[in-house]
Image 1 (cartoon, helix red, strand yellow):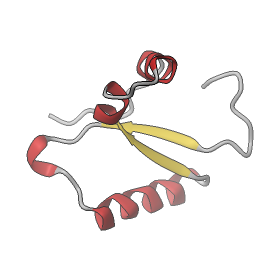
Image 2 (cartoon, rainbow, N blue to C red):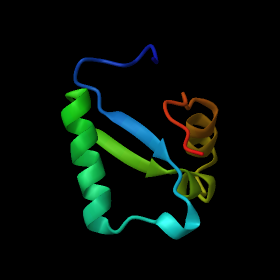
Image 3 (tube, helix red, strand yellow):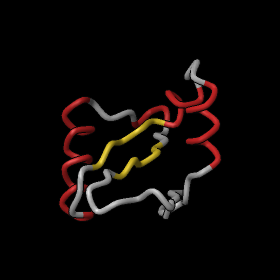
Length: 74
């Protein structure tokens, strides 16, 4: 957990989907809501590919150097 994590902080969840299992908008929203119910706070799903493609070098470096694996399928 980061030093700047506060009681009102949201949780950003970095996700990566199999190419043939890309969720639609409804499924994506449902996943966020289910995680919010489990974690008791706002959750933002962030796709790894969108971070890797980001033109914002600082954001890209910060996000990609700090993930903590929770579940890995396969």
